[in-house]
Amino acid sequence: MQAFAIGIDIGGTNTVIGKIDRQGRVLQRSALKTAAYPDIADYIDALGSAVLQTIGPDTAACAGVGIGAPNASYYTGEIVQAANLPWKNRVPLKALLEQRLGGMPVTLTNDANTAAMGEMLYGAAQHMRDFIVITLGTGVGSGIVCNGELVYGRDGFAGELGHVIVKPHGRACGCGRRGCLETYCSATGVARTARQMLRRTDEDSLLRQTAPDDITSKTVYEAAVQGDALACRIFAFTGKVLGEALANFIAFSSPEAIILFGGLALAGELLLQPVREAIDRNVLAVYRGRTDLIVSTIPSQDAAILGASALAWK
Amino acid sequence: MQAFAIGIDIGGTNTVIGKIDRQGRVLQRSALKTAAYPDIADYIDALGSAVLQTIGPDTAACAGVGIGAPNASYYTGEIVQAANLPWKNRVPLKALLEQRLGGMPVTLTNDANTAAMGEMLYGAAQHMRDFIVITLGTGVGSGIVCNGELVYGRDGFAGELGHVIVKPHGRACGCGRRGCLETYCSATGVARTARQMLRRTDEDSLLRQTAPDDITSKTVYEAAVQGDALACRIFAFTGKVLGEALANFIAFSSPEAIILFGGLALAGELLLQPVREAIDRNVLAVYRGRTDLIVSTIPSQDAAILGASALAWK
Image (cartoon, rainbow over the protein chains, first blue to last red):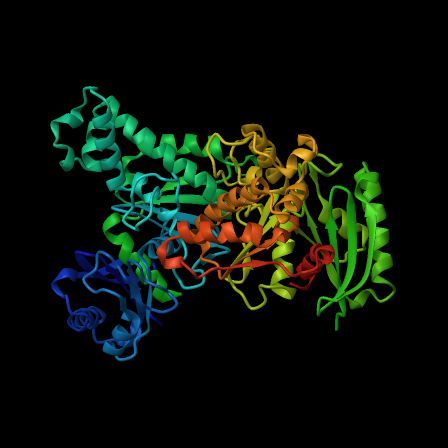
């Protein structure tokens, strides 16, 4: 009987490794600095050592290793051109780590998909067969579940809803195109909206106490909580853009719920109310009121490793 | 060994009934006038008689009955508020017909989903696990397959991509909202574009030989084939709007192919070239060149019953 799985979250700054039981309890947690290993061979060696140490002597008790990483493909086990990771081009992470771990099975997928797995096993989506997780962080990601299965698509890269174009000829996006959802509804998108709105008006605002380039979504949130009208309008605009996009996503998969995850989702009703209004105003009648809007309740420091470990149980 | 299945296509004008073998050969075909039965009890009785006659004496050879109909739910077996059918509100079609057929299993889904089933079993999507069928007829419908399964969503109504809003505050749609894909990229959308473009310019065009209200997508097609510049621009515009929408759909499910089906798809390169260009210009880099654009090759008079019969084999 396998007692635990290893969940790994690979981010640009840290790699977090968790030992997690079937009930989703984090038994042990460790980390290493991703950026300290510009050579992938060194990284695999350090990661392998940390994983083996976390597993401990009873390797038969370990169900396997699940990894969430940016730009990762479930099918090929590769990370491809991840802007925030130190290794460029294609990294066959699954194969390299399996070799380092003496054949222990490793499953890899992108980090928004692990968030969806986490919600399905341990979070708001337990018993749901159709739902979408939208991650609202530095960027906007998504994990889509249809008929109880993650949607991977042809190459394992499906579900980049942050890069749906919501405003043709809109804001320049890191992906090289314009008007992606991510440029409006990520934490950085909120900061961009703030700078834009501040430029376009003389209106008094708490946000003017901060240099424009230092404004973050947190600055905007704190001003909005204090009742700052401009900051509240920034959330209203962000929520409207997000809700309009979600109304279109609902026409695709008619999910039971859309689960918002990540820093920006913690803004609560400041964001949720305009999102809900925009969904209701824009969704096709047959779907109206049929999709719940939920904020993830998985503790943020554990969500990524929980979701990654869920992959290993599959 | 079951030798055949019954496929039924319920349209506003006709109901077509086909007897189809496992290889997708149409062994027998009959029809009745949907509109001639305003009372659902009379319709079920007539449809049941026609089906039993089509099945013949050896009922054990029949795998079952599959039906495609507008606004039909796979889960509930109901048709709900179908604007073009004579029965309003909810019609429990599956239950009624099963009763009339003495317990023969009946499966119901919307007509764009049967098109996707038909492509999967007998058409361009054989061996594909991820694809999208877009039906370009009077309206725009869609059937989405992810991981080898039709996407039904919470209530069985998923996949209304014709009602994704592509132009906020755009053209009024029959659904009560504005800017739906269907208002631009259906046959009626093409005619609307024609009337709009003719109003906005004095440019000479073959289309001016037809009264504006009599222009159809066929009028525009015939003018374009003769090299009429305005007619060609109508297709270029239609294809651009469609391609931009498809680029966003690709970010959702990363399909192996998008299969275009229905009258408008027969316009060929007039439509396909601008669609392809708009996809290439708008799709996220990771998906570029990874999704084939295909025109359905299933004979149009058989597609609906073939797809519906495929449901019965599942």
